[in-house]
Image (spheres, rainbow, N blue to C red):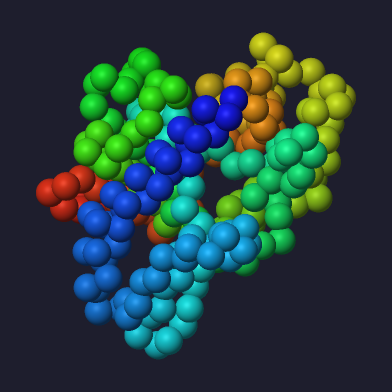
Length: 235
């Protein structure tokens, strides 16, 4: 399990390097952006801040980078953590924590074939280097936009925390011991479902939101980034 943690930590750092080199270095030249600063202070990172951006009006917003480094860009959703075990202690997940995040940069990664387990999954025992990355799909979405969307669907923060507790305590029946509302999601009756992961050491409970819904919430814009530049897909 410690090897998996090490793999995730190194891979995340390499993905961040790719984003810095091929995404932020390009968008910082936009007229509306003044300064982009990557945060290295651990205390600030624990507050949900990986990046601080200032625009030309000197407005500052804080970004938390979340890239699905175990899955390819074929995955049509993103998992938001509701709770997990950290050092054998159950703690609230980053979606429901009262941190300082203004925006999430959500990402999916496409890598060389040797690192792929199948169409959707990557080999979790292999470190991804910057050279292994073929492209990234990235979405900026405000944390408040996600919270407001889920609230309209009947899940404010209190309801999300309560649902995570019910799932963990076995108060709700899970499909395949993992999923809640997955059938409805697969039938496109809803754009989210809940998951309890048994494959991660942290055993997180998560809410998975469909990628197209996240693009809609993120100003209807998906960035596709590779070493040749940035393309934009709009809904």
